[in-house]
Image (cartoon, rainbow, N blue to C red; front, side, top):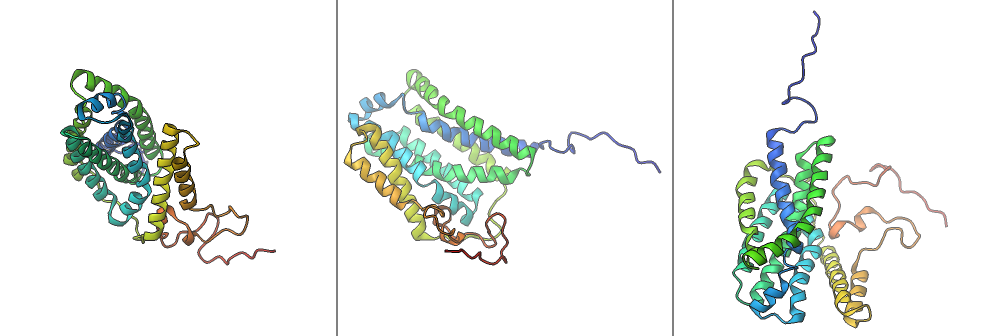
Length: 297
């Protein structure tokens, strides 16, 4: 019997996305694009917000700084939390918080409410960003499909930073600065309606352990560094508060394993966000059973 080479159909062709994969990609890219837009969407609207809610000139800077502190300072921590409770669960929870915080910001009547909403937006961004990236990686097999998905994610996030400033200016001129917040609400609602049906839960095979003191140290270091860099932009590099924050951030940051020129430390002594490593994790080129090398003096 002679085997016939039948043409490969689109549904079975290797390296081709299925309809479900496209839907997953659309949901995750929409969420990540919205997060990127939020970083810059209020930049143009800051003077109008200050006039409408009574912000001082110095207080306006904190609308952007509060978001950046929360988003950058807690990303590593929430990345580890996603490994503990599930990335899909944290992704959906973060999107819900983002939608509610955006609604609160759009309806704010005073500086305190707006600042609280902006901090909540930053925390939601810190939760959704690592969870969404992990879901994107686990939803596509290693190879061209995953590379394509990650490439689209990077391109859209880069475009989102620029689009945010433009969109914020358009919404402020045509409608109101409040729509720079409220525009997130329908997008978050759409993601929350579709995501539970298309996203599968993702978590490590071995549940990691959270090192609470290490997590607090790393998060505090990131917060201090972000605050210090922001303060230098406002007051200059000679400002004592900025220098103190930068020094505290450098002191709290985990040291490099080879910074002292001695033998490398075991992997259990330094992990991302102060979390204990997953079982079986070894350094490249080694095996769990390999003996510890001897170091000559």
